Image (cartoon, rainbow, N blue to C red; front, side, top):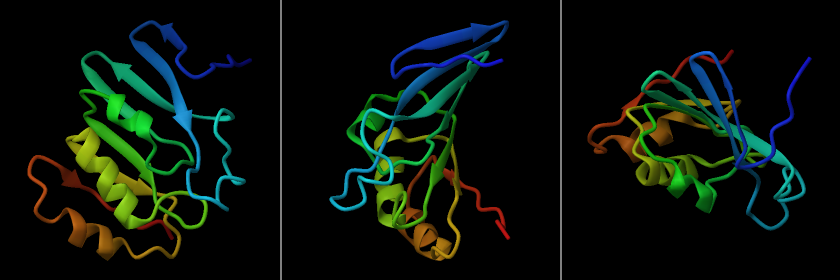
Length: 130
């Protein structure tokens, strides 16, 4: 069983709220991987904690509408998702307390560390994906 959520729709089960948000590519030539209007990311709310799971996306304008994100899971894998620079830009817009990059394959995570090194109030947590 499952529930299909369109962008902007929510689903609530007990103490968990799930909000479907857009996920797509914006760079010409890469938009074929995740076209606008098809894919979702999700914001999970557990009590007062909001967790953003971006899905396969680039740093899209809709990210600026996400407020009070405690933890953000952001994809970083060219050509399908974001560059380290795009992840850093998304972090600066959302200002989550904790950021986990994922889906990064061979992308240089050290570059993201460098880009966010002076960002106050944001903790970058990198886990070995191999």
